[in-house]
Image 1 (tube, rainbow, N blue to C red):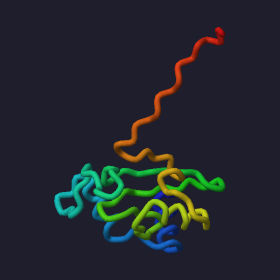
Image 2: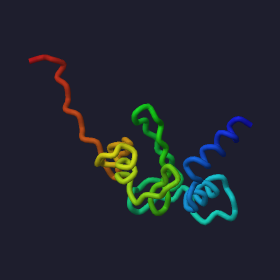
Image 3: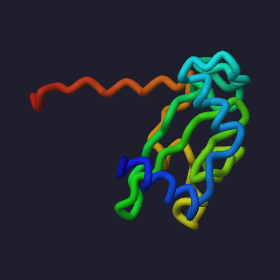
Length: 119
Protein backbone atom coordinates (compact mmCIF):
# COMPACT_ATOMS: atom_id res chain seq x y z
CA UNK A 1 0.00 0.00 0.00
CA UNK A 2 2.86 2.39 0.83
CA UNK A 3 4.39 1.87 -2.63
CA UNK A 4 1.10 2.67 -4.34
CA UNK A 5 0.68 5.87 -2.31
CA UNK A 6 4.27 6.90 -3.01
CA UNK A 7 3.76 6.27 -6.74
CA UNK A 8 0.56 8.34 -6.79
CA UNK A 9 2.35 11.19 -4.99
CA UNK A 10 5.17 11.02 -7.53
CA UNK A 11 2.64 11.17 -10.38
CA UNK A 12 1.06 14.26 -8.85
CA UNK A 13 4.45 15.98 -8.51
CA UNK A 14 6.24 14.86 -11.69
CA UNK A 15 3.38 13.90 -13.98
CA UNK A 16 2.30 10.53 -15.34
CA UNK A 17 3.95 8.56 -18.13
CA UNK A 18 3.21 9.65 -21.69
CA UNK A 19 1.08 7.67 -24.16
CA UNK A 20 4.03 6.05 -25.97
CA UNK A 21 5.57 4.83 -22.72
CA UNK A 22 2.22 3.52 -21.52
CA UNK A 23 1.79 1.60 -24.80
CA UNK A 24 5.30 0.14 -24.55
CA UNK A 25 4.66 -0.97 -20.98
CA UNK A 26 1.34 -2.52 -21.95
CA UNK A 27 3.04 -4.40 -24.78
CA UNK A 28 5.77 -5.61 -22.42
CA UNK A 29 3.08 -6.94 -20.08
CA UNK A 30 1.36 -8.76 -22.95
CA UNK A 31 -1.70 -6.51 -23.10
CA UNK A 32 -3.63 -7.37 -26.27
CA UNK A 33 -4.60 -3.71 -26.79
CA UNK A 34 -0.98 -2.56 -26.96
CA UNK A 35 -0.02 -0.66 -30.07
CA UNK A 36 3.79 -0.78 -29.79
CA UNK A 37 5.64 -4.02 -30.51
CA UNK A 38 8.16 -4.95 -27.82
CA UNK A 39 11.32 -6.86 -28.66
CA UNK A 40 11.69 -5.26 -32.08
CA UNK A 41 14.83 -3.25 -32.64
CA UNK A 42 14.60 0.44 -33.43
CA UNK A 43 16.09 1.61 -36.69
CA UNK A 44 18.01 4.54 -35.24
CA UNK A 45 19.55 3.06 -32.10
CA UNK A 46 19.60 -0.69 -32.71
CA UNK A 47 18.25 -1.21 -29.17
CA UNK A 48 15.22 -3.39 -28.54
CA UNK A 49 11.95 -1.59 -27.90
CA UNK A 50 11.03 -1.96 -24.24
CA UNK A 51 14.62 -2.13 -23.01
CA UNK A 52 15.24 -0.10 -19.86
CA UNK A 53 18.63 1.59 -19.50
CA UNK A 54 19.84 2.73 -16.12
CA UNK A 55 22.47 5.21 -14.98
CA UNK A 56 23.24 6.74 -11.63
CA UNK A 57 24.09 10.44 -11.73
CA UNK A 58 24.65 12.62 -8.65
CA UNK A 59 23.31 9.84 -6.42
CA UNK A 60 20.04 9.47 -8.36
CA UNK A 61 19.23 6.39 -10.43
CA UNK A 62 17.79 7.38 -13.81
CA UNK A 63 15.91 4.82 -15.92
CA UNK A 64 15.21 5.33 -19.61
CA UNK A 65 12.90 3.15 -21.69
CA UNK A 66 13.62 2.53 -25.37
CA UNK A 67 10.57 3.32 -27.50
CA UNK A 68 9.99 2.66 -31.16
CA UNK A 69 10.36 6.37 -31.87
CA UNK A 70 12.76 7.60 -29.21
CA UNK A 71 13.38 7.27 -25.49
CA UNK A 72 11.17 7.91 -22.45
CA UNK A 73 12.54 9.46 -19.29
CA UNK A 74 10.82 11.26 -16.45
CA UNK A 75 7.43 11.33 -18.20
CA UNK A 76 8.75 12.83 -21.44
CA UNK A 77 9.80 11.40 -24.79
CA UNK A 78 13.16 12.32 -26.32
CA UNK A 79 14.44 11.70 -29.86
CA UNK A 80 17.89 10.52 -28.78
CA UNK A 81 19.87 9.22 -25.82
CA UNK A 82 22.02 12.33 -26.06
CA UNK A 83 18.94 14.49 -25.42
CA UNK A 84 18.13 12.41 -22.34
CA UNK A 85 21.73 12.66 -21.07
CA UNK A 86 21.64 16.45 -21.60
CA UNK A 87 18.34 16.68 -19.68
CA UNK A 88 19.82 14.68 -16.79
CA UNK A 89 23.20 16.41 -16.56
CA UNK A 90 22.61 19.84 -18.06
CA UNK A 91 25.65 19.40 -20.34
CA UNK A 92 26.25 17.83 -23.74
CA UNK A 93 26.98 14.10 -23.63
CA UNK A 94 27.15 11.29 -26.13
CA UNK A 95 24.08 9.34 -25.03
CA UNK A 96 25.56 5.93 -25.80
CA UNK A 97 28.65 6.75 -23.75
CA UNK A 98 26.63 8.22 -20.86
CA UNK A 99 24.49 5.07 -20.59
CA UNK A 100 27.44 2.74 -21.45
CA UNK A 101 25.64 1.29 -24.48
CA UNK A 102 27.62 -0.26 -27.30
CA UNK A 103 26.22 0.49 -30.74
CA UNK A 104 25.11 -2.53 -32.73
CA UNK A 105 27.68 -3.77 -35.18
CA UNK A 106 30.50 -2.38 -33.05
CA UNK A 107 33.32 -4.88 -32.69
CA UNK A 108 35.84 -4.39 -29.89
CA UNK A 109 39.42 -3.88 -31.00
CA UNK A 110 41.65 -6.90 -30.37
CA UNK A 111 44.04 -6.52 -27.47
CA UNK A 112 47.74 -6.78 -28.35
CA UNK A 113 49.31 -10.10 -27.37
CA UNK A 114 51.34 -9.93 -24.21
CA UNK A 115 54.88 -11.29 -24.43
CA UNK A 116 54.92 -12.00 -20.69
CA UNK A 117 57.64 -9.42 -20.07
CA UNK A 118 60.34 -11.45 -21.87
CA UNK A 119 62.67 -9.38 -24.02
